[in-house]
Image (cartoon, rainbow, N blue to C red):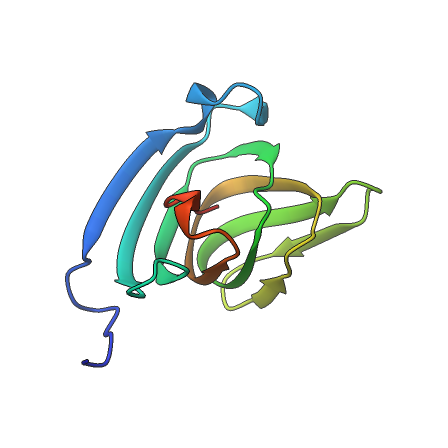
Length: 126
């Protein structure tokens, strides 16, 4: 197995309009692009880059996610209203069990590492 270099071409690129899942979107019309750089053989660990246009939506669950913001501004908002804002250079961890919202304030790109708690969860990256 080789080292995964994020400067190289991704394994896969996916695009989606989050409004296609209307039960999740709270505000805006966020568009997501995910460049998957690594997936473990069992599908429970993945890493890559993600870009989103502005909007706000309910966060996914059943995963741990490490994020490093490359560009843009975003926020995480817990169900009880606590807010964390992040910009370029910020790194943070979202543990499984977090309940709340993602808000992309200005188009944001991040690098991520996700450990899924269910291998069948798909490529649902936020």
